[in-house]
Length: 338
Image (cartoon, rainbow, N blue to C red):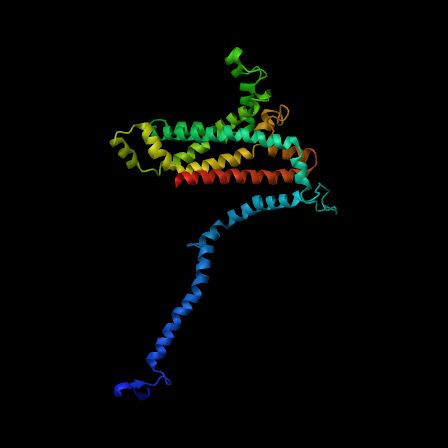
């Protein structure tokens, strides 16, 4: 029961010492938001970590584990190996692999062959990435407008991508050898020495080969992106008097920009990991290392020359090289978007 005390102007007022049911209820309700506010940061943190659909983490767990085992662990192990005096030993053998700091990196960067391999892959990327981007976008745009035999053309471009590299390389060796079909067609204009034994032409020839072989995959990426470009935009440009060329640059190119970023990154990463093509086409990076890539050099130093620690250092340098190029591409494309 609420006690009444005299108030101003003779009005009775509730005694604050006893408190009323109403007052205590207000204090209780006033405290509730405080409790909710105290829980909100934790909930927000869980929301940022788990996302809106936490169940998705469960379904993606097998892929995450696969990435961790197949990619993350080897990278971490390679980084550790690059700082050790590491060498191969018999299974179960107790050997000492001391920490050597940056000695393996100094050895790698002091080798002219390492610098040559990075220069080679730089030339490769300068040829392969622009060619891949331009040709795949143009061909995807053309295929998107094809009405008849659309499936045939898509399969025809995709077949080289899924074909075994050994079989496709045999065809290119037949085409670009000294007595090959290309030189027979060119006649006196054929280069001497021939394409794959020419220091200036070996890496550009490999770049064209890789562009041709992987073109079907990137065409499919752009074809998927083109399905999300509203057809009304093309009609609007057409009504304004714009032709096919204007539609391409004002509608198609901006509309497939996310796919363009993806193609740039994938082509760069694939090119930086070049191994099979120079190993098969030029007999292991010839002539005189003109087509050797960093990954091929890692194989030669780590497996053939039994220096896995130096090979690991080259691999870490290659990762940094790719990350820098990818960051520059992302920054450039992001600036274009803004």
